[in-house]
Image 1 (cartoon, one colour):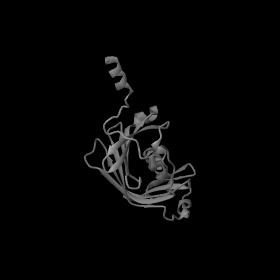
Image 2 (tube, one colour):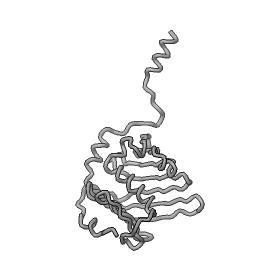
Image 3 (tube, helix red, strand yellow):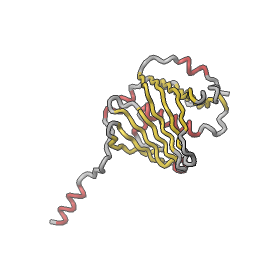
Length: 204
């Protein structure tokens, strides 16, 4: 009888508290995003400093065309991803040579792109996703898979709005103890975007 009881227990599905699968319609909703523009605020917490570094800017995305991430405070730096080409923008908003300085920008860009097109929902060679019951938001945790990413990040978190599955917040936890939090606001989806704005940047 005991063996039968144990067999029954082992056959039951394991449900971990707080863990959930993402809603099935979420993937379809993200695939329908053709354009997105929003404002963002970035908070940079460095373990050796007591004050947060605050930056603000604008994100413009057009599916299969480009992603522009540009600050308007404290300067005009940022980056442009266009046709798999990364263009780093200097403090004056003009293209500059990367020289390895755009590492954090690249990670932010990759995460936002995966969050916008739905790729974040699937395990990939870089990150393993975990879906957590996040109250008012759909909370996705990303665990680094590659060794080089494990050396940089302990965990990444994304928060999506439940009403329309749009990305709201990105949190990057670095192994150094530093943390970057990006909050999106004034989100506008599938409104016309002037594609020519992406072509005004020419990499050097």
